[in-house]
Image (tube, rainbow, N blue to C red; front, side, top):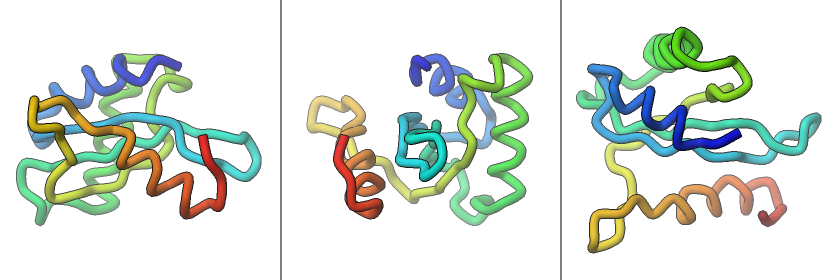
Length: 101
């Protein structure tokens, strides 16, 4: 699965300010697709928006390319150059699972 495809789709959603998509640990499958989203309005973050974003992605891409879950952050980490610092996000999930990439 190429995360950029799901990122491109989710970035077009009108309630998304920024998004990162990557693999996170899963006990049964080894890894699953996760989206970490910076919503335009943080108060919108929650299960309803997560379901809406997953459904939106599935309308445009195959299910296997879409996130299985969505977490929300008020801001996503970026390098001084503006590039998304996805590794910081990934490391949080892998460290919490006691595993590394």
